[in-house]
Image (cartoon, rainbow, N blue to C red; front, side, top):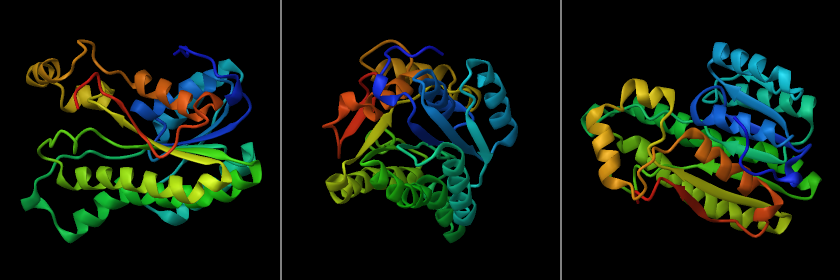
Length: 254
């Protein structure tokens, strides 16, 4: 995937992407590699991670990959430490990983609640906490959190996911205020219904396509690359005064 725009300020910077082996995360990895960044990515899907690493090897900027369970905070900490040992302090953190498993309120248990928060919100906090000291050493940095249009649109079948994604926007605002004096910018990208392989395989049928066509202002389907291009802009010096904001990439749904 070729980048639409080249941001020279990203060349040589260390970028960490969570959930980077497939879907939107994979697009982030491709996009930042194309910018000349030193990319590290974490994912629980070891096979997909190794496949992506091998596919990018011919570019000459082979990314660092580590199989990581982001819900295990010890594993997350060890993975970030290893990424830093390979590429240096993290300049850009893309908090991308999530799991939009469908569920109803009646199905929620204390265990499923904890699991949903762990995979959709908790790791963002602890990844940010761990990379901030390095960003301060660098003189600044960028944290990009991934939200969702689901709660804005009051979509059904995702109450815990929606709660976590709403929390991410609050987290972004709070961290932007706290970290701003150290020249660390924090923003949220809010994707629309993105046509990842998972979405196409599990959820996007003819009824879903009709719903997308009815709700989006633009007729084209939102692709993973559309989210990644917003991320490279926000990570670059071109966005040096953008912080505490939510940037919606949904074709005009919400």
